[in-house]
Length: 160
Image 1 (cartoon, rainbow, N blue to C red):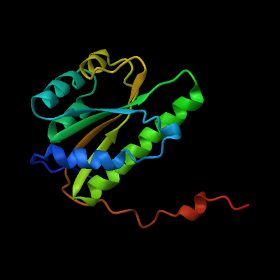
Image 2: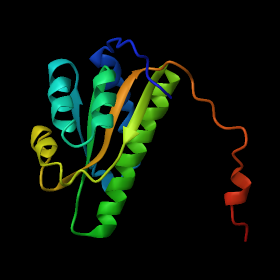
Image 3: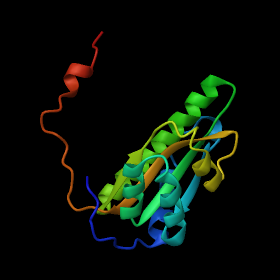
């Protein structure tokens, strides 16, 4: 899905309402292992300036979207807990993506290894017990992306 070339503001309350629903993602022992950094306006421009030092394409996507969210996941020395927590944060992001699409917005989820992006980690106040689970750009969609008609789930199911 591509975002509209004309940046139309999105009221912050719209995104906050969606996040209040998205946090109902399943998470083991209700740890709620996520945190959000919301960027629009001047804050988003600071983010663009920093991200452009690492990835020009991502910086352009952030610049073209009215809202950018950085979503973090808690890290843990116990890998089982860390995997559970990252899965919970991924479910939250998917919930948010479904809600944006249903409301006529579009969302792009960028995920990479940001651990060496020191200026970004500092700007977003990423703590030592966190990692970036996604950089989300949200805006009004130019078009609806339809699910491919040739996608066949049956080939991916093992029947015992």
